[in-house]
Image 1 (cartoon, rainbow, N blue to C red):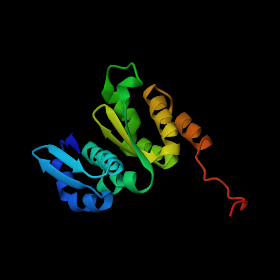
Image 2: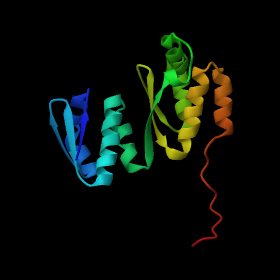
Image 3: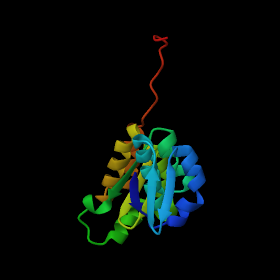
Length: 166
Protein backbone atom coordinates (compact mmCIF):
# COMPACT_ATOMS: atom_id res chain seq x y z
CA UNK A 1 0.00 0.00 0.00
CA UNK A 2 1.40 3.38 -1.07
CA UNK A 3 0.23 6.86 -0.15
CA UNK A 4 0.95 9.88 -2.35
CA UNK A 5 0.19 13.59 -1.82
CA UNK A 6 -1.51 15.03 -4.90
CA UNK A 7 -1.99 18.66 -5.99
CA UNK A 8 -4.34 17.99 -8.92
CA UNK A 9 -6.75 15.58 -7.26
CA UNK A 10 -9.59 16.08 -9.76
CA UNK A 11 -7.50 14.59 -12.57
CA UNK A 12 -7.18 11.35 -10.58
CA UNK A 13 -10.75 11.21 -9.26
CA UNK A 14 -12.26 11.78 -12.71
CA UNK A 15 -10.23 8.90 -14.17
CA UNK A 16 -10.28 6.63 -11.08
CA UNK A 17 -12.29 3.77 -12.63
CA UNK A 18 -10.20 3.65 -15.80
CA UNK A 19 -6.98 3.77 -13.76
CA UNK A 20 -8.15 0.96 -11.48
CA UNK A 21 -9.11 -1.26 -14.42
CA UNK A 22 -5.99 -0.53 -16.44
CA UNK A 23 -3.47 -0.79 -13.59
CA UNK A 24 -5.25 -3.52 -11.59
CA UNK A 25 -5.12 -1.56 -8.31
CA UNK A 26 -7.57 -0.02 -5.83
CA UNK A 27 -7.34 3.78 -5.55
CA UNK A 28 -8.83 5.69 -2.62
CA UNK A 29 -8.37 9.24 -1.46
CA UNK A 30 -8.74 11.23 1.74
CA UNK A 31 -8.25 14.92 1.13
CA UNK A 32 -5.12 15.29 -0.99
CA UNK A 33 -3.78 11.87 0.02
CA UNK A 34 -4.21 9.15 -2.58
CA UNK A 35 -3.75 5.54 -1.45
CA UNK A 36 -2.90 2.77 -3.91
CA UNK A 37 -3.47 -0.90 -3.04
CA UNK A 38 -2.44 -3.82 -5.23
CA UNK A 39 0.52 -5.98 -6.16
CA UNK A 40 3.98 -4.42 -5.81
CA UNK A 41 4.58 -4.04 -9.55
CA UNK A 42 1.08 -2.68 -10.15
CA UNK A 43 1.49 -0.22 -7.26
CA UNK A 44 4.77 1.02 -8.73
CA UNK A 45 3.22 1.55 -12.19
CA UNK A 46 0.16 3.22 -10.67
CA UNK A 47 2.40 5.56 -8.66
CA UNK A 48 4.29 6.57 -11.81
CA UNK A 49 1.06 7.13 -13.78
CA UNK A 50 -0.46 9.21 -10.96
CA UNK A 51 2.77 11.22 -10.64
CA UNK A 52 2.63 11.92 -14.40
CA UNK A 53 -1.03 13.02 -14.13
CA UNK A 54 -0.15 15.21 -11.16
CA UNK A 55 2.75 16.73 -13.13
CA UNK A 56 0.35 17.85 -15.85
CA UNK A 57 0.44 15.19 -18.57
CA UNK A 58 -2.87 14.35 -20.26
CA UNK A 59 -4.47 11.04 -19.30
CA UNK A 60 -3.75 9.40 -22.69
CA UNK A 61 -0.03 10.19 -22.38
CA UNK A 62 0.30 9.22 -18.71
CA UNK A 63 -1.29 5.82 -19.35
CA UNK A 64 1.50 5.00 -21.85
CA UNK A 65 3.78 4.40 -18.85
CA UNK A 66 1.82 1.29 -17.92
CA UNK A 67 1.03 -0.05 -21.36
CA UNK A 68 4.08 0.35 -23.61
CA UNK A 69 7.19 0.01 -21.43
CA UNK A 70 7.53 3.78 -21.35
CA UNK A 71 9.48 5.60 -18.63
CA UNK A 72 8.57 8.79 -16.73
CA UNK A 73 11.37 11.06 -15.57
CA UNK A 74 11.46 14.56 -14.13
CA UNK A 75 14.47 16.74 -14.98
CA UNK A 76 15.38 19.82 -12.97
CA UNK A 77 16.47 22.64 -15.29
CA UNK A 78 18.60 24.21 -12.55
CA UNK A 79 20.90 21.17 -12.60
CA UNK A 80 21.92 21.95 -16.18
CA UNK A 81 22.42 25.71 -16.21
CA UNK A 82 24.21 28.42 -14.26
CA UNK A 83 21.86 31.18 -15.41
CA UNK A 84 19.91 33.00 -12.71
CA UNK A 85 16.95 34.03 -14.89
CA UNK A 86 15.05 30.78 -15.38
CA UNK A 87 12.39 32.49 -17.50
CA UNK A 88 14.77 32.78 -20.45
CA UNK A 89 15.91 29.17 -20.08
CA UNK A 90 12.30 27.95 -20.09
CA UNK A 91 11.63 30.17 -23.12
CA UNK A 92 14.54 28.57 -25.00
CA UNK A 93 13.14 25.11 -24.28
CA UNK A 94 9.61 26.02 -25.35
CA UNK A 95 10.64 28.01 -28.42
CA UNK A 96 8.55 30.44 -30.42
CA UNK A 97 4.96 29.21 -30.32
CA UNK A 98 6.08 25.89 -28.79
CA UNK A 99 8.04 24.98 -31.91
CA UNK A 100 11.24 23.80 -30.16
CA UNK A 101 9.32 21.55 -27.77
CA UNK A 102 7.32 20.08 -30.67
CA UNK A 103 10.45 19.32 -32.71
CA UNK A 104 12.17 17.78 -29.67
CA UNK A 105 9.12 15.62 -29.13
CA UNK A 106 9.15 14.44 -32.76
CA UNK A 107 12.89 13.73 -32.88
CA UNK A 108 13.12 11.94 -29.51
CA UNK A 109 9.77 10.10 -29.67
CA UNK A 110 9.10 11.41 -26.14
CA UNK A 111 6.40 13.62 -24.64
CA UNK A 112 7.48 16.72 -22.71
CA UNK A 113 5.65 18.79 -20.11
CA UNK A 114 7.05 21.91 -18.46
CA UNK A 115 6.16 22.82 -14.87
CA UNK A 116 8.02 25.61 -13.07
CA UNK A 117 11.72 24.67 -13.28
CA UNK A 118 11.05 21.01 -14.02
CA UNK A 119 10.54 19.12 -17.27
CA UNK A 120 8.60 15.87 -17.26
CA UNK A 121 9.53 13.39 -19.97
CA UNK A 122 7.54 10.28 -20.93
CA UNK A 123 8.99 8.07 -23.61
CA UNK A 124 10.59 4.76 -24.51
CA UNK A 125 13.56 3.88 -22.29
CA UNK A 126 15.97 3.74 -25.24
CA UNK A 127 15.04 7.31 -26.28
CA UNK A 128 15.32 8.84 -22.81
CA UNK A 129 19.09 9.45 -22.99
CA UNK A 130 18.72 11.50 -26.20
CA UNK A 131 15.88 13.52 -24.66
CA UNK A 132 17.94 14.32 -21.55
CA UNK A 133 20.95 15.26 -23.67
CA UNK A 134 18.83 17.57 -25.84
CA UNK A 135 17.33 19.35 -22.81
CA UNK A 136 20.78 19.69 -21.24
CA UNK A 137 22.25 21.16 -24.43
CA UNK A 138 19.47 23.71 -24.91
CA UNK A 139 19.59 24.85 -21.28
CA UNK A 140 23.35 25.28 -21.51
CA UNK A 141 22.93 27.58 -24.52
CA UNK A 142 23.49 25.39 -27.59
CA UNK A 143 21.73 26.49 -30.74
CA UNK A 144 18.48 24.65 -31.40
CA UNK A 145 19.62 23.73 -34.92
CA UNK A 146 22.71 21.99 -33.52
CA UNK A 147 20.57 20.05 -31.05
CA UNK A 148 18.20 18.99 -33.85
CA UNK A 149 21.15 17.79 -35.93
CA UNK A 150 22.50 15.85 -32.94
CA UNK A 151 19.11 14.16 -32.45
CA UNK A 152 18.74 13.36 -36.15
CA UNK A 153 22.15 11.65 -36.16
CA UNK A 154 21.29 9.60 -33.07
CA UNK A 155 17.76 8.52 -33.98
CA UNK A 156 16.77 5.25 -32.31
CA UNK A 157 15.82 2.82 -35.03
CA UNK A 158 14.16 -0.55 -34.74
CA UNK A 159 16.53 -3.48 -35.19
CA UNK A 160 16.44 -5.17 -38.57
CA UNK A 161 15.00 -8.67 -38.44
CA UNK A 162 17.23 -10.98 -40.48
CA UNK A 163 14.88 -13.93 -39.98
CA UNK A 164 17.55 -16.10 -38.33
CA UNK A 165 15.52 -16.94 -35.22
CA UNK A 166 12.23 -18.76 -35.33
